[in-house]
Image (tube, rainbow, N blue to C red; front, side, top):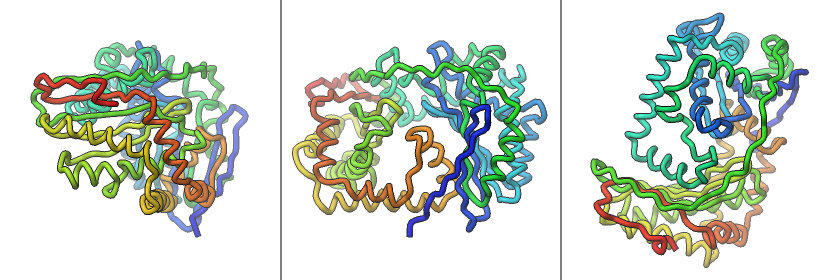
Length: 424
């Protein structure tokens, strides 16, 4: 029988939502404090501020220094982490159940009372500047950033880098950080999720202890729907030994009813070693060491893309081969064997993830924030099994028929040009 999710929900009077999933057979607890908004909320002049504040949460509070935070987490054997994405920020920990109260005290302190010490702000500007350089030195990271920036209309914040730029980060001042924190870190902008060996009442008591005195924030929640703007972008980088390539098309929003068919399409096209792209481009033709497809979805938009890297002289053939796979999915049904293999692959990953407290903690947050409800494993598997050959072909036609393919290329181009006709 599939490991089931039994979510309990509570809410404080100030709007803070608490979600728990009890797993009495384990000895650990994973807890996350989620901010409902990420980098796409930022105006252009403050690009990177969400990620910067995420870093500053670790740099000291009114009660703890940065070293205190690290030492206390280590003392209870906890793993303390955080991330910023386009649509959310999360600070999370995983500890033994006996240390839940101590671990939550650290998390709550971090997200309610960051000190924003001037010397730490200066230091963190340098740290994030190095993080930006590191991303730019990694061609796979850089090509994906190039693709994203040029896929969306320049007015759309979805295309801006989560890290920000050296210029925007360098301009951040303590007052600006404090104002953004006050605006967005109100309890009504947060969701707490916890999975593992705990009781819902226990988590509600901890949340009330640390957050009941916090006031709601009045952050504006309006957003413009992003608009894809297909382009071909080529950047010469002579010191690279390969051309790094991203090809992509607009996709559906995260909660679209066709999401299971999209997952299957992505899996069989470029989601593993048995996928069409891997078998054709790497195994049969030897064109690339790495090639894969991926789907990035948001509350109101999405993008489906393919990444690959190859020698300059093999680039035209790699692009042609990827486009040919797009056409094949549009024109013909996938085989019974492919369809079942993709379903089994996704099903296996889903069920194994349910054995992890951290995965279940994250899944609760995403289901609540994007769907406003929770799906059992049996329900998700049922939806997956219901996907037909026609459903997969319908998604392929929606993605690859009529949509202009966007392309980004990075490497020793030496006069190489990509024409729009090469992507048809």
